[in-house]
Length: 272
Image (tube, rainbow, N blue to C red; front, side, top):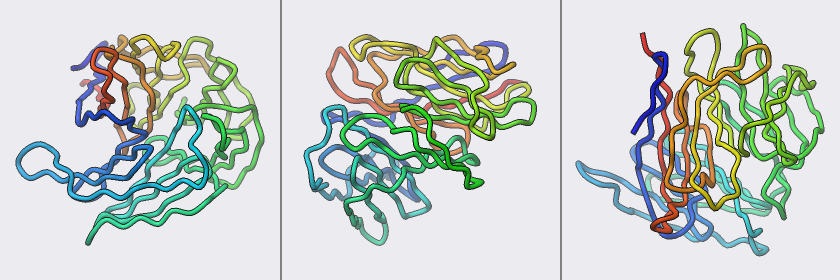
């Protein structure tokens, strides 16, 4: 399924669905890793559908918060899993391994394949507490936020933060406020796709978690959001959205009709 406007295409591909909540899905070399509240599972595929090959349980030292979030980062066969108050490192080869420990370390938030932001997660909540560090070592404390994305506008780097209080804050490279976007939801993700003069950001629409959601691609023009595609509709709320490689993102959706959680690879591509 895809939507297209002015040569920019936003495409979704369903890759996995399951009854248990999915927090994130990532693709190490030769496989797929699914992070769920109870376990990490590795899937492999040989000329057909994905099939589970190994699974290890998660053993949190305290009960998970009600609206649990988690994030995966992969590098070839090695992966990291970030969870509230816990960090795990593991590998999918030669066999699945997982080492988890209590941790207050910041989560690594990617935006496309180039930009990184370190953000401290509020352990008992579902958002980042506002303490951030850039790749250049700049440390700053801002208000709590749900998600972050980096975009380029006319060669300058901007960070966008979906704030807990409801708007998306536009920050310059020094993390000083440079604008505000009132109309997005709480999940945003940056990509490397460069359609037109800058890079793109994907954003959900505002919702209450009980209605179907949509994703839309935007560029940032004069520190404001300029839509590039029509909304790409989903059969339920987007419960997680993370950058997945350069021009893709991973969206987890709770299907309101089936009750299952669905993982979609979202791809932005530019026309000629």
